[in-house]
Image (cartoon, rainbow, N blue to C red; front, side, top):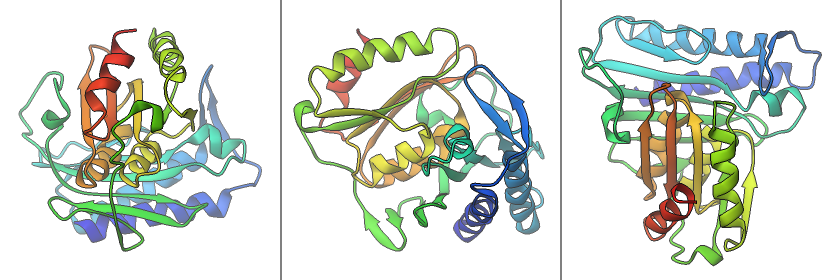
Length: 264
């Protein structure tokens, strides 16, 4: 399954780079987002690769490519995370592919990240940096074949964090308040514009933590698995609107980060 996840992430990444910097067909322009034909082409490529090997598996995709086969294996995919960056030529985006073992009969919101399912494998690929970040449950996380580890920083003042400002109701104000408080203490706070890649980069140790409200399962599925296998802690829960409140960080600072972000 990991080989399939890698192949799918790389396949989408190839489509990204073939079209990067060209005149793009905009599928829809939203107030705080953009949808491109590239998103749908990438998702179709990922789905085709998965189903070629596992035709009975289920798939949840951002661009409406959901396939419910009643399988205990659910692939959660984001074909192009960071679409706005991609559209404006900012080289910070990725494809994200993850597989979880789930209970097909389970209903309701996930009260914690663990309720998303049992992680099987995940892969994230960034075309601009040619970085393939991946993991298989219980085997650690890797970047282009080299083992990666989350930050071990224990002081907020020595940490660099990344966040995003979602477009769901209340999420921007929530994140602004948390960021404003954290800016007074942390070394730096960045807003990079691609949550899946941000979370994977927590696993790489580049960021000490990530926090955002109003993101979706496909934003955290692969990155969360990678970060956890690299030694980070993933604290996330699903809200009534189907979005997730998510904090990913070094275990040494996660509790203090939660206190800062969620109580400001």
